[in-house]
Image 1: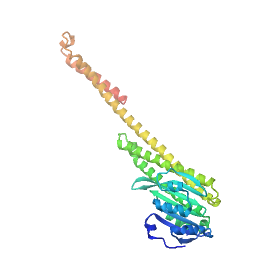
Image 2 (image 1 turned 120 degrees about the horizontal axis):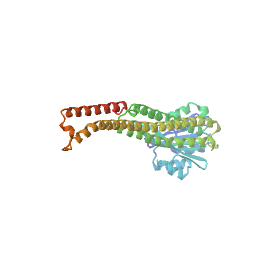
Image 3 (image 1 turned 60 degrees about the horizontal axis):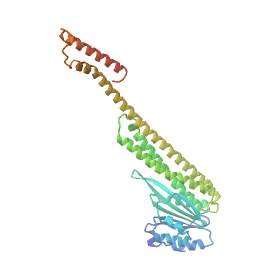
Image 4 (image 1 turned 180 degrees about the horizontal axis):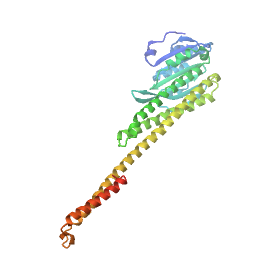
Length: 335
């Protein structure tokens, strides 16, 4: 067994390649060429390999060392796979989506997982945090690591799901910041635009979370040859967390929908009030306009034109009519 990893392997694509004995303790870092030797040994240990955006030649090397199915290798070489879980002989191939906030924007990634009786391989693409902390936590519990690759699989899934929670909290924070603009009576195009963008991102986020729930559920119920019975209780905890994230996501979607409806309703009400006021002032001006237009027709025989006080009487009638109409509209809250 070689304890030296070649320089080209640590250039970025191979993040870790570790052998563990059957007691769950770490044997040490190994090279890719030594993987087949470890798997052929009688120790009954397993290999945990972590990759980040490997090239085709590296994946072909994995296919050779782990005897992986070519279709699974083809899927692992390409990002933008749908979340799924497939069984190829005695190897399980899992595609799960990851998400994280990067500089205030949500970005998505993928993790392709190969799990066999004596190996665990993770292939990360795009936005995805390193699983070094999950692996370190596993190494602190040799008794559980003795359960084999399925416990490592649990640790990875738990790490991915735990990173879903901060994104939901970020959505809540942004919605709370928009609350004042949502209930404002003045229309702001930016508010509706921001709410729409949040809902679009939340919908995309739900498309990440929902399949994860199905994948974890399948691992809890099926594939006993790869997922130990002792690990299923831990997977139930992951399943519970996924449900909480899913419910939180659905709640946020409903709140965003309600926020958009409330904002539009308030804007409509405010516009209605403006229209009422304009209509009130138009009605108020209609009375003197009618009287002025009446006497602007220049008829020859208008008896009141010859009266001594007709001008002042007409002013008084106009003011009285206008004042009465103003008082009525003010009482009706149209002004």
